[in-house]
Length: 467
Image 1: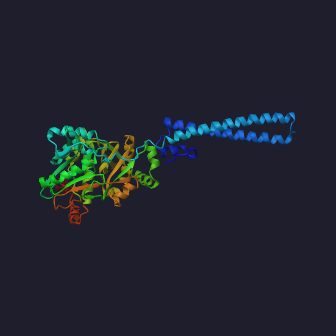
Image 2 (image 1 turned 90 degrees about the horizontal axis):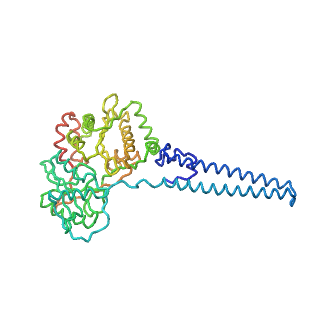
């Protein structure tokens, strides 16, 4: 958004808020002082122009060539010099203010930290193979040094998934002749009677995938996985990315909805639309309270989450899954719970990485929908994200034009397409493990009629095998 002097002078505080600058900050005070100096110079120039006009009128009453006339000429020259000096001063002050305002336009990163494989290729010789346990530290170092790497590709998540669900993760990598890792893909292995045997990178989350800085390495790894898939007897390999054009069959039905964040809560207030602000304010009539924390909020979070998952007809994760994530020292996890009259009605699970705060799980009990408790919770979360210094907020994955998509879009979030690639054995078919599959409609309807306590017992053994 371009900010000119005229717009800034008309409403300086609003202009600062819209550009993420706190009106009470030293930076804002300096800009306001510069704007005041411009206004003072304009007022002085107006006075000097008036002085010139007054002297010009005096010439009509004196005789040309007289002493009075010569005195007026000297007076006009003095007034004209003062006018030019003030005019130059105004020009300099406007240039200084314009330069300072232009500095407000750029510093925010334009795009969220989503991993992208460059077009570059490598001329190094390499082979693709499964890494041994002894080579995992090399893989961990490689992943941590990549720019915008998906957090779920970091080694700690493989441990979390195995601890909670007993699914092992193995890594296939491109290794050069001097044992340098040039790229790779972590694959979590699923094996159950109900859903079969397959591998996913990375399950249960929105981001994973193949990591490399070279296109030819990516192509070679995918080609190698074809043989791995057949050798291991997998029905498919699913690789989840936001990277298009990797030359394999892919689905792109889902998008992440991501919102760039300003620097202050005041700027966020100005950034949100009037309709969103009104809905959030409506919830205030019910005196909601919000708490941010850790494991001490897990019981309340899980109660809301389990009720909502039952109402959606979806098997619920175990409480132990969330406890395992919260307890891990290398994961930045936060729980948020909203209470009305002491009862938990909305809850969310927050994960932060690379300057972006993500909410992979969020729920609200149906009885709180009339209060706009969900809207109010997200507003508190966005304020929290700004206070914590995050540059982006990830509302999570949605199908384009679905209800959740429209909910996230109203906050100003923009869609970023997911590309989930499939490596299939000869004659294999893409999987259909998703709630949109028509064959699951009857099961979903049945699940919605179960008591919540039953779903928390029956659900976890099922959902642990649905990536």
